[in-house]
Length: 151
Image 1 (cartoon, helix red, strand yellow):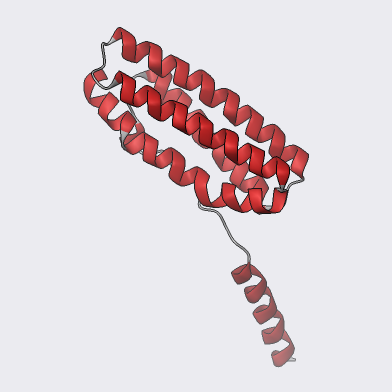
Image 2 (cartoon, rainbow, N blue to C red):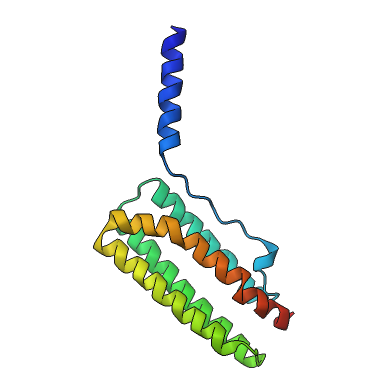
């Protein structure tokens, strides 16, 4: 009887071990730019990404993932427009470089959505591997420098 229980535990462990769990993004103070509107949008984007990761981890259907990606893309576009407006008003020295990074990020999210639509399995892997790094890099590099000027 003990062997049967151990075998069951081992099977469950192997199933869990073989399943990729995506790390959730946690809001960090270093993501803050010191502007409530931008910081609130950053936190909302993190919530959306974490929900996407949850759905990807729980094998949500393609239509659900596509809808979530469309919502994230819309939120990102709106967020970038606000950030760019505030940068212009503050005469942010790195405005053009930051705006170019926004365009690059929008192109990347478009490519990720296209990849997912074309082939949900490989698109899912791309999302799992790229989205968190994508946002964290922008928050800790470009937005960190923006914080220095807006603060």
